[in-house]
Amino acid sequence: MTHKASRQDWVGRTMKRINDSVSGKLRLPDNAIVIDAENLHFLPLFTKRRMELLRLIRTEQATTVSALANALGRKKSAISRDLHILEGGALVTRERNGKTVRAQAETDYIVVALP
Image 1 (cartoon, rainbow, N blue to C red):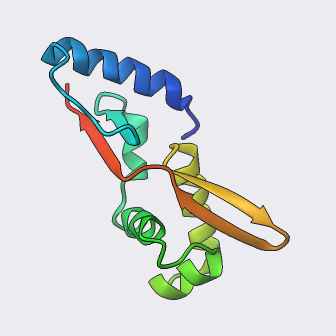
Image 2: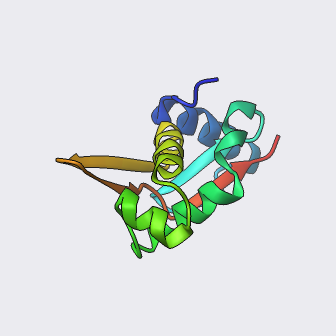
């Protein structure tokens, strides 16, 4: 299963559906990620551990893989895997500087559009 998707494509389609259904009355923050609940391949993004990881990155208490693993009591390989999955869902970006990988949250809001 692939988690790669064009953020612009799915945000655009979902925002159109939301706007059509609420006649443009809904106002979302600029950095909101909108996920269409009918698009089931996004559901694996939202595990408890990935949401803890995303919350920690967003609050910038830790951003390196090592610091995230220590803070969450998890293996670095598990953190790296989850960062890769979250990056595929356009929720985080990763930046490598030598051997150090830092993660940054791409959003403060995740909105799930229900069918």
